[in-house]
Amino acid sequence: MRRRAVLLVLAVCAALVPATAAQARIPIRVGIGDQSTTMFDQPAFQRARFERVRFFVPWNIMDNPGQVTAATQFVQRARAARFSILLHVSTDNYTIRKAKLPSVAAYTSKVGRLVRYFRGLGVREFGTWNEANHASQPTYRSPTRAASFFRAMYRMVKGPCPSCGVVALDVLDQTGVERYMRTFYRHLSPTFRRRATIVGIHNYGDVNRRRTTFTRSIIRQAHHYNSRTRFWFTETGGIVKFGRSFPCNTTRAANRIDTMFSLARRFRTSGVQRMYVYNWTGAGCAARFDAGLTTPAGTPRAAYTTLRRQLVNYER
Image 1 (cartoon, rainbow, N blue to C red):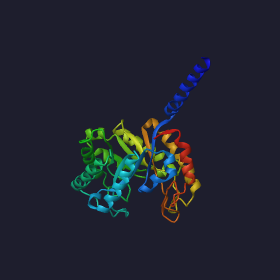
Image 2: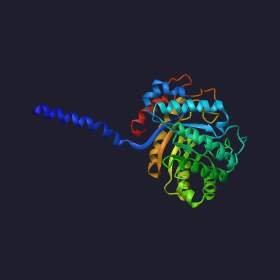
Image 3: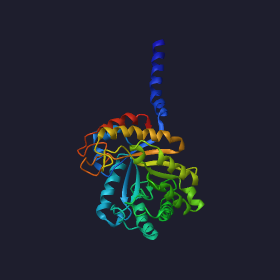
Image 4: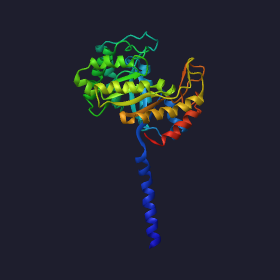
């Protein structure tokens, strides 16, 4: 009887261990951003056990059948594997200062079709406009238009689906971001300021230069207008290569993955809820930009090992 009782106690303790470990995890969810479906089939990707992905599409994607097909394949592949998807609206022309800024009417029409279509495929989270303050986006000189886009997106998404999520504003950590945000918020009514509860941050600069400057400023600025704002690092990660500023170095990129997690922990109590690491498949050192966790051939880099070591402490 004593032996049976001991075995029963041991079994109960064993059952409690996973729950205890899960409760101890830092309540920041970690996902991945990438534009290719090939990652879903890679063993290294599957071992990481992500549950969230981010994918961006042109604002007028529904006018391009080829792009619709590619995005549909990504969403269907992700949903088949039970991933939650953040679909982010972006430019249709990444040439610096060349993209045409849509009118609010055009945005409402084109993005409305986009939202209806992808919501039908199971997407429940949408971003109003990707990296709105960067010169590769037509919104970079018009925070007032970005605010108008948010109002339109909110109505299109939350009207039919109150439980769906909207990233109201998505900004890069660069000089002038505070001014951009002030103009954005001042163009919103008090009602829509209250509704702007999620702000996306691309903090490559802070992560890779090991600083907190802009992440802190963005959070402070958003909280000035809405103290309930929560923050998602919608693009972040360790840069392997970026022009002359960051020569190709996979060891440095791996180290910056640690910095990324440290930054998220630092601002957790300020409202940081998620991180989307960008990206899975690297472009190679011959490219202008590479932040991949793997080589172009799919071989895991040092940053992947660092990420896996950190992930055990975080939620998905």
